[in-house]
Image (cartoon, rainbow, N blue to C red; front, side, top):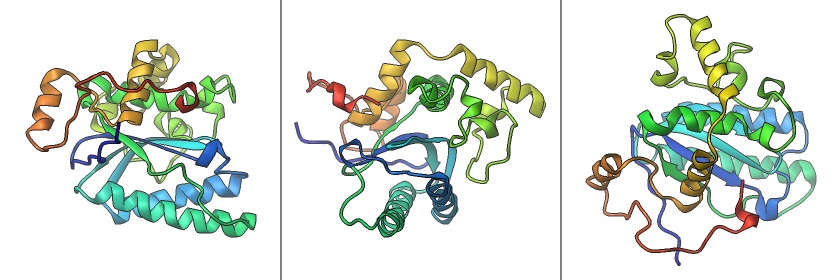
Length: 232
């Protein structure tokens, strides 16, 4: 089945996944992670995209971001992707592609899935066995969300602000959410929707989005199952 055209709508949170070609490493050392975060921060500001959460893994990364314009997110991803490939190839003395095709993304219903998506993103290093506590992983937004450090890339979503009336209350409430984790069903939904490009939300959310686009937003027929190789 042909892949659907990617859909971007302003004012709606998007869960983005980008992977290295053939699962190859896209970050080799701390300088690479820092350079990539700087690129994201620069171009998020340039193209009016608010990044609420992120995690950079060795061979892929996740973003939870809300663009203010229809072209903002793809423009940001294109600018970051091209510049980072030049940087990485020059540094490694290599040539050719770095990414596994285009990035994958989905629209996320704020009330039902945004905080779950943040938790999903911040728990990636734990699921991968890199750390036992997400606070020990330096290349994610978790440290910012719980007050360990200030991150210039992160623009907290209003739902995060609503977790408490003080910084301490918000940070503690979010830490508790991450400690509680998400269900296997939520994890599956968050992964599949991003890889497939299906909107993630209830029927009313999807119906409202469908009024704004002619692109199909849900899977109408049984499709090819995601292989083990595609799991993230």
